Amino acid sequence: MNSDRKEFIDQFQKRTKRLAIDVIHFSKSLPKTEEATIMKRQLLRSATSVAANYRAACRARSAAEFHSKISIVIEEADETLFWLELLEESETATMASVATLKKEITEVLYVMAKARKNTK
Image 1 (cartoon, rainbow, N blue to C red):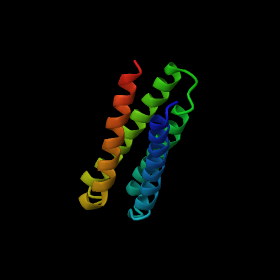
Image 2 (cartoon, helix red, strand yellow):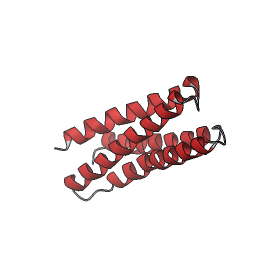
Image 3 (cartoon, rainbow, N blue to C red):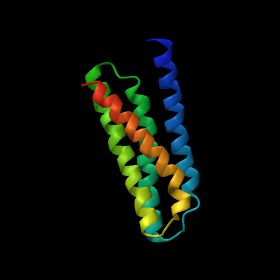
Image 4 (cartoon, helix red, strand yellow):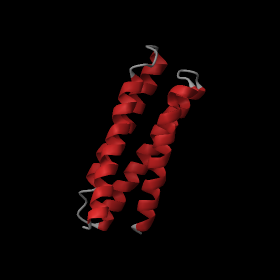
């Protein structure tokens, strides 16, 4: 593996983990209502899954396994975006409070979709 690729992988693993941590911190600011708690759980599950599955993809033993794991990352990233949108549109969270997270998860989605396309 060339050093540029290894550096990208290392940086993207840190980036997806940072996103998970940012979502954890954000979730602490959500109201303690039943509906907010349900959405928060789903958001936490999907956002942390993005980081965990990207890490697993980096250890894939074949192109097919990598493609499969990256597909899971994409699904979980899209679900994370959904929960952020739902929190915003239900007025459970403000547009300002989710803007940075939505931007980051959208960028992760874009990069992962491109990576998956390049493995076909």
